[in-house]
Length: 182
Image (cartoon, rainbow, N blue to C red; front, side, top):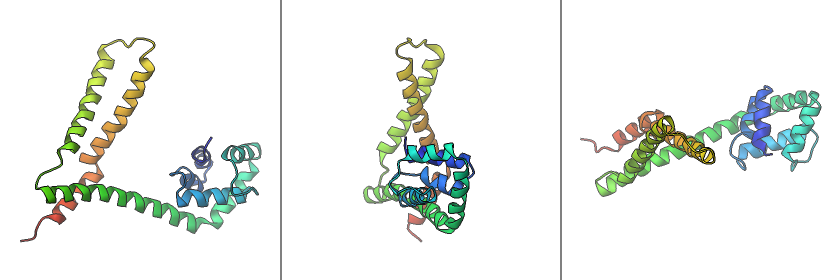
């Protein structure tokens, strides 16, 4: 068991700040702060085991009240940490956009690898969709095929988000800003 499971449980119990931070990337500043607040709110050491924490909360629902009080007491700091994590995510996306613009400016042509990979993912997605519709998968192989399909769905979603999602408008804006002014 990990802290993400504890975070998911806390989200369901109406603790959005603690749950959101615990559900984030492990080792992130926000996750560390949330672990500290949850542990101290339950009267445990800071290096408490997530399984123990979840067991205590489930065994004694009144401990949720203690965690709500702890969340409220640290609300401002927890919101700052959530905002900081969101900013880091936006910076990461901006870095990917600026990489593409830099390569285009330096070489005078687009990085074809990005488009080849995108077309491979899209083609693989539709190819596997068609295969799953028209071909019977042998019993022993079905789990691995569905695992591959799940990976392709995630990749397909990322391709669509990159080229058509909010990151696309960010990319377009970055390209417009990088054009020489007349």
